[in-house]
Length: 202
Image (cartoon, rainbow, N blue to C red; front, side):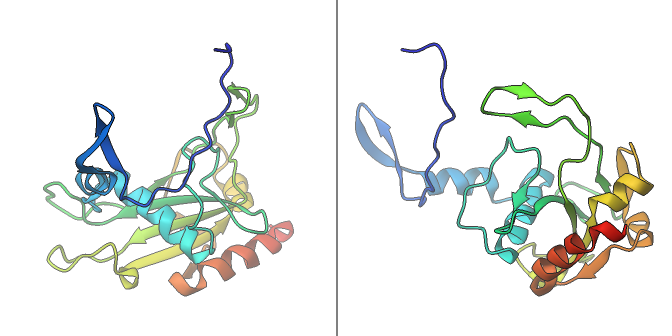
């Protein structure tokens, strides 16, 4: 066995794949694992992945596989690097009030999986941010699969860099003040491409 191991080439799964025991398939499927691990769509971690999936579908790139190690979340078919952030007023846990909407926007070091090395400059890695807000405020009827319950705010990274500099988090009201484009699901892709094409003006 060689000392160095290349990146694993991951294939898209169907969910029908079975677990094996003593070399034979048993009655446990990958779909069952997904149901067990990710059915709570209101959980912060799962909701974040769901938001990425929604934006990936809007961009027409959801037939690929989510990468955990990229310095940004998505890349459009025309090469635009997209960072997706999510937040919600209602959480899985007990609340005494609705949550305040804030997002993590801190600059980071990029990591290259090909050589297992970090970059030397801390910065925001994407070209465009999409801030996804599950804006529904009634616990009895909230449904993260209902895209009408989401608001999407698209903002070029240049605006964050210019106005938030090294800031680690930002509020929804501040994003709106910076001129983020509020769009529905159908217009996410158009807004990303339009604002990216205008980035030289910021």
